[in-house]
Each structure stands twice: as C-alpha cells, then as structure tokens.
Image 1 (cartoon, rainbow, N blue to C red):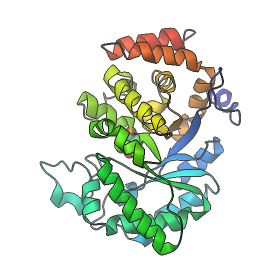
Image 2: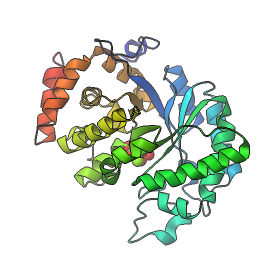
Image 3: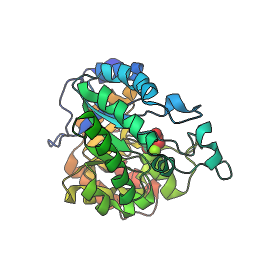
Image 4: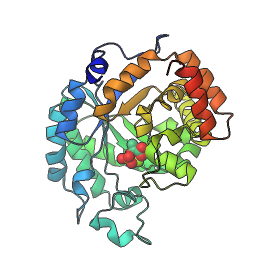
Length: 316
Ligand code: PEP
Ligand code: MG
C-alpha cells in the first residue's frame, strides 16, 4: 500500500477539476527534512524551532539557533521554507519562562519575546543567515493582534537592515480565536496566513490538545470551519495565501473541507505526504466547496463527517 501511494510522487498536486494545492511538509529535524525531500514535498510549510530548547534556562543565542537551523536548511536548498519562530506555549514550557507561569500554565510565549526583543533578534539573525540558500519565509506563532505582528516586523526589519539583506515575507499563524477576529487587520500586514488547526480547534471547542481523545477530525466542527472560512476570506481579500499546518491538513474527513473553503497550501507530517497527495488528486474542488457550504450550516461534527463521506468519498 505504501508503494501504491508513493507511485504518485512527482505528479501534480491538484484536484481532478484542476485546482492546485501546494503540499508542504512539517519538519523539526534533519531526518524529517530528508523525508520531506524524498516524498517530493513542495518545500516546508512549518519548520518548528522550539523543540531543541524546551530545557532552555535563557533565550537561545544566535549561535544556538544557527546550530539547529543550518543542518535542516542545508537539506532544503532552493526550496520554499517557512521557519516558525520559537513557540513556547502551554504544552511547550521551558524553565526560562517558568517564572511567568500561572497555575502551571504559561499561556503564550509571544508577549514575553516581545518584552525582551533580543529573543527575536538572535533568532531572526540566525534565520536570515542560514536561510540565504533557501526561499525563506518567517512566521510568528500564537499571534493575537495586528500590533503584535507589527512589533515582530519592526524587529525583523532592523535585523535584516543590520545584515544588509531584505527582510523575508513575514506571516502570522492563525490559531487563536482573537486572531480570527482580527483576520482582516492581520491580513493587511501579514504576507501570508498559516492556520494552526491543532491549537485553533482546541481553543474554539474548549478542549485540551494534550488529551489523546482530541482528534484532528474535530477540525471539521462547524464552529472551527466558520473560523477557517473567515480566515481564508480575509486573506484572499488582501491577496494573501492561506496554509493549514496542523494535523487536520492530513485528515481525510477534513482535507475536502479545507479545499472547499479555499485553503491554498496544506503542510503535513512527512509520513503523511504521499497519502495526502493521493487524496487531493481524487477530489473535485467544486464538490468540496458544496460540501463545505453545507457543513457550515450543520450543528455537529458528526453531521459534517457524514456529509464529507457521502459527497466527497462516496466510494469509501
Ligand atoms: C498547530 O497548532 O496546529 C500547529 C501547527 O502548531 P503546533 O502543533 O506546533 O502548536
Ligand atoms: Mg500551535
């Protein structure tokens, strides 16, 4: 079965009615970057950078960031690579931020990084230097307001100016309800959006993402779909692309809905690339749009799953 899926590597990733979908990989290690290249990913849609620093007692230095980034980017020469800045949130809690925890919960790392701009400057310098050999883009996780994104852009532009290079495109992750509410304002300032469906789903449905019962299939919930819809509409009004980089982007009951809502890019785990490509190539974007429109009127996630099975995967 694995070989059957791999047989479509190298074929265009588009629906049967011709809608292209960029299929990218989520990586955090050299091994994953190699797997992404082997499976013909269109570059990397999410490079997670915080994982080596979960035991950090101070903000990582430029040299420490470079040591993590350079080997991974070295495997991805010439490809689009979206590097995400440090995402220290509830489930990724380094000692360096422990003093800010309330009841064992950290909340978001972004305000702490903006309060100590060296935290960003060192990472931006490392990304700008190590990213020179790839088509680099940068995205900020857990953005809540357009002001936060503007503050990040200012630090990035200063870092790029010092190095005498142009600042790469800066995008915002949409994974908080506040960001969905601010999507129009954010889209005016962001180069692109990437929806973090893992956090967005648990935030909207008030679930704990660490709970094993929380499946990526829950991103098909009508309230989550409504948030995706608003995000895509806002981005497209401003001519920006939208990616989905949470695990829902590889789930058969969610992929058709994301395509139906107009998502431009799916970024998935390397192990999910082959199957996701095959799925996209079996779908009709027009049918997906009808299914998504009907899903938005549903009350429960079960009724949405039923619609997707009936309309989009009738043979299964
Ligand atoms: C997400 O929240 O969906 C996401 C892609 O980021 P992470 O899982 O690293 O929080
Ligand atoms: Mg997230």
